[in-house]
Length: 56
Image 1: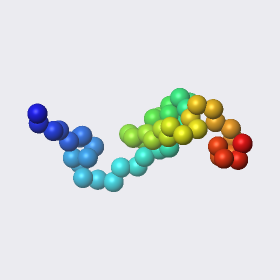
Image 2: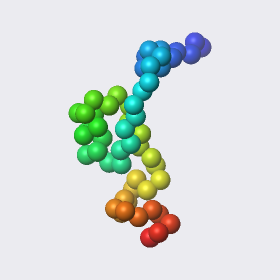
Image 3: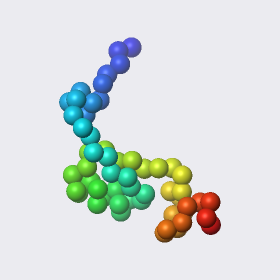
Image 4: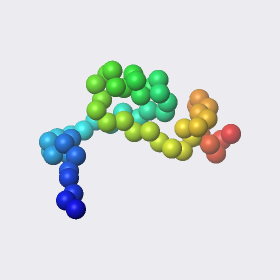
């Protein structure tokens, strides 16, 4: 089986990644032109503004 490299990696350029936490922030990042989105799994199910999980 031949491994293929993703086209963004083949360009050999810097890739800006937007950190998103829900569908709304993902849509905003997409409309702003980001090609790569980072969706962290920790805390994504129930975000509380300004607090980490340990502070709750």
